Image 1: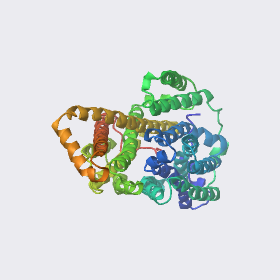
Image 2: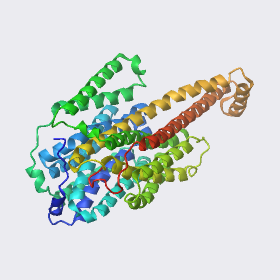
Image 3: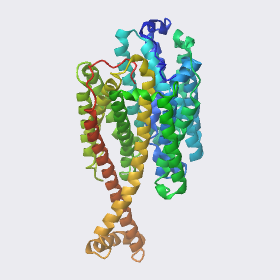
Image 4: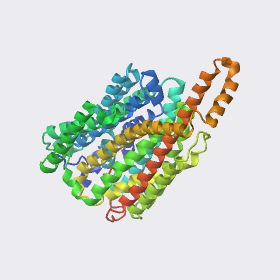
Length: 529
């Protein structure tokens, strides 16, 4: 099963469009992809509002992002099998319908539990949208026009994260965070209409001999990814391995992961063929996309939180401030499209990771006195650097694989990216909480309550607040105000720590890049995603 690729052989690409204008097909599948990518980013700026509305902490609200990513990751490896078994058009329409219905459930959720259940269903529906859309797009264009088609596809995927935080912030401030999910409903309905009208399955889909679903491998995948996410999300809250249930969850995680690896390496027709990891470039590519997932998803989550929680920005303003990242990526796409066929991808990756690392290191110098435009240029440059990672990493990872390995490899590659993103969000949230407590203790120890600095600060605040609270009641008010400032300063240093560690991760990636074997520029298979 894993070796069967859901991409048509080159000689069948001309008949895949069934006489339909391929640009109509491109528009149809781009709507589905745009909706899915948009939703990944749109919820990030609404997290504090979701937490407040559903009586949850910010840590608990991050489940809204991570539960989606895990469900998304579980479905990715199985999408090839489902498209061959049930027909790709039918499976794509089912995924869009599930995603749209789950979006309504997310918006209408009265509690965090129902929200998370809806997000899991939404993630399962969205998991196959990008790979399926890309396969259909590649089949519908003749080989000489595939470059233009994929440029449009990449442009759409880049535009969605630009609009996501800004649109999500505007909807949250103007109406409610619930409309950040309701926005998917009209897009989903239009996508269903266009897919039904303009997309048809090629003959090889209906004639494919599909083996049974690898139930044991799929079950093991669900168990270890689910256990991993629960441990990451609840570990901080329940003191990690101090909780008995976390130790048991870790046990099931290790056992199911080891079984998954053993089963998928030894047996045939498994959910994922891990033997593709024998290819050194693909193995290094998976490691890089995993580390990149940690870096990019962490940054996307942490930066809006910094602006909202410490600087008091609204969701819309925070979305506008981080939007230049997408603009930078859009500016970089034509350049990388030109260079990817002429330059060794290792040099492009080195430039991309170095740029991302340096700008993230610059974020590690943030203070509480930032203006909205202070980080505009670094955020813009970050997006430009990211555009030098997406395409070259695929070129290097897929460039040494045989065409028949691409379908299986794509599922595994995207699985590593999504799991890395989920781990990154959870680790970043945990670090913000832990490091804030550490810095709070450090500040208290360096400024003793009996010291002159502390006493002067208290007295100045008492004098300032006495007209409002009265002289007798000014001490508790002054102490409360000083403690709030202590928390802000401690949280600031926690954000600084996270940015600096993410920068270090990027520089480690630069070293890993040069473990790749040289790939001839432009050699990556067309189906690489």
